[in-house]
Amino acid sequence: MTVTRRIFLTVAATAVAAATTTASAQAGPDRAAAGELRVLTMNLWHGGAQVNDGLDKQVAVIEKHRPDVVGLQETSGHAAKDLAERLGWDHWQSDGSLGVISRHPITSDAETIGGGAGAGVRIRIDESTGQEVELWTAHLGYTPYGPYDACFDQMPVDTIMEREAESGRTGQATELAEKLKGKIADADTTPVLLVGDFNSPSHLDWTDANQHCGYGQVDWPATKIVADAGMTDSYRQAHPDPAADPATTWSPIYPNHDGSTGEVEPQDRIDFITYAGSGLGVQDSSVIVDGDPAPYPDQADNAWPTDHAAVLTTFSVG
Image 1 (cartoon, rainbow, N blue to C red):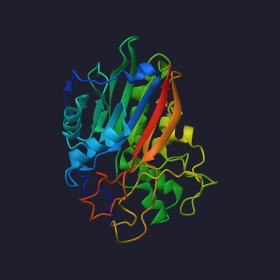
Image 2 (image 1 turned 30 degrees about the horizontal axis):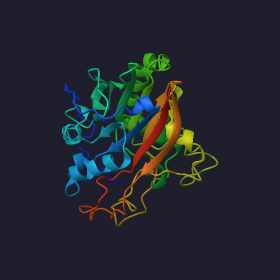
Image 3 (image 1 turned 180 degrees about the horizontal axis):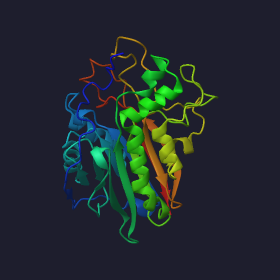
């Protein structure tokens, strides 16, 4: 089949080049000192260019949902900077897909993995104690896409796994896990967050008890590798039953393969907030879509500025 999903993402996995972390004098209130950290992941869909007034709509999302730190994907090399400047926040901006914005100060240069698929910074969330967290954002390869292989083409699982490797996701997740290995070992001192658009369902969701398209357990490599490395899926920590709470993030504007037309689009949870460290406890986690977005190609006036749902997890800190 000809994969039309994410057709605009021809540069989604472009390399992360050197980028500047810009400190803000208006970092905002010390929310972590109150024992709470709100973490958001959001794919901005070409930096907001696919809707009218994209930046204004992104600002509205942040102001409504009040995250403390945000991992971004599809920033188009500018949207994290633009958004942070509007909010008066700190930021790190790549020249490709990835970015981080934070009401707290970013205290390190970014570390990256090859191909621009993942990057991380340290953020000081409590000035009084010096407590920091590592926040990594990831945007893994998007094609071939596993749910299409399963739901449209009914490929055997072994073939699907081969194509997961072909997509780059398996290797990218492996490289992320290796990069984070030492950080995860030290996560009780400095908690680790890995968030982002994995372009893959979760092995916690495609199970024998919660079948998709006739498939039982599928150990999707991107999420399985991250979990085996010691990262916990915060949404499934809060909502462990995928049948009762599927938490679809792909896609609020693609109910069908071509948006409003075509085959029924497989709906999956492909955006994640994962964490490690005994100092973080999941209080709640939610999937966010504001309003009732119109399907593609009639999305320009949607209040919701992207083709993904966002994910917000509130952690206790201490």
